[in-house]
Length: 552
RNA sequence: UGGGGUGUAGCCAAGCGGUAAGGCACGGGGCUUUGACUCCCGCAUGCGCAGGUCCGAAUCCUGCCACCCCAGCCA
Image (tube, rainbow, N blue to C red):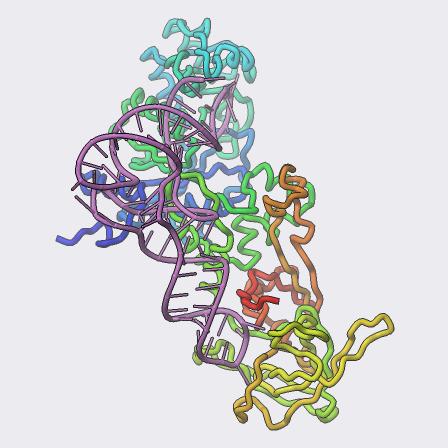
């Protein structure tokens, strides 16, 4: 009988191996969950967790739930709920159910009473500071709370009154009775419930006590039938507590927590605190600034869901702390965009070219394939005439050896048009080159002549040109090894050139492009039309440049 | 100094006692009306270090080193 779980020969990551064994041992349907806290926007690090949670479910024929981890109303907000769902769907994942941790508050409460009755939880009157003092340190054991031995009746009474709102915030907690001498400080009678007189975005003012993550999460998992609760490495130390809760609540079957290393990207900071500071300080235009590692930022930049997922899959899943190279993400992006993005012409930093032997007023129509190699994408007409614009960097007055572009006396082909020769450069009083005077060879029209020249340039003809704004992005952070700034904190390592705005020209047709549409601008890179575009001035974000093997 | 983890190439990452996969990056070459794409070729006598077991060790054993996480009424 065919193996229904995994393809033969396919290498499984360590989590998949565990799940595979689970399934082969008759463990039943696989259930996972993606548990974001609705307190911010999803970023590419969350996308890794998303890929793992949904990927495992899909690979083993199971399901994955979206469950908001909303046990702390002080930090969360409804506004993030919709944004999170939008991003998940954009990535192409479909959750079996949309749930809130707060859906289980009643059950959590009942289980808390159950633990009190079992004598493994107690109401503690110690203040935050006192609890810290009693907890001990990494090397010294803690001391039992003086309230640890209250009777079940007293604990029950106190807990019910906590729920009834009789006590102020911070005055009491419900704590697990585990082991104040445990070398794992998470096991030193951790808090299970705290008092918080604060309305919750889902449950309103029904509650004034809220369960802690460590108590609520395993309960939520078990109640949903989650078989594998996948999370990042920092929760490894919480696993004994997770298992303790499952054990004490007597859940069967037991969900299993497995931890993996979170995604890190070089020159990219993913912490919510840092991203928030970038937004609030105005360093970036918002959470969806194209320089942000948030999914909305990457999307606006022109990154595709397919490329992000491909990158995450290639980066792999393991337990070793690692820092991935953004070059791999960019590779995946180009690979995704290359076969689909229409080729268009755009000149980002223009310099005027006049073809002195081209008849004044004459305009010729050229034919450009929209996507060479894919005839189904059709072609379009592009105008060509006496006045053109090329990239300033495509001309050098005194070029090095292997400069295949324009130079005095040199020839290049203008893409899909003619071979032109640079006769002279016109300068202003300051010596800046302001125009190139060239001649064209009428015998060299594309497709009609075999004469070859080494370089081919892109251009936009004046008759064709529409003004456009180009936004060129770079990392928000300076390199780690920059001697000037390497020891500074993130806030002081901001890259002043993380955005460079240019004004140039594009083919007229691009004015009609839709917001978010991606193109490859010939010889320069992949760009996507930004929402800031107006009918008069289209704006293009550089998603990623083309690879460039020219060593100037 | 306690406990929990992790160390394989510049960056990820396979490897599960039988003689170091793959991807990215990088270098060289072919093709090219995008210096793109694509196609060839190269890239760890070596697996944190030191011993040991074994015919044979990245895989097993011992010791050491480095890095990450934990002392929230955050998640």
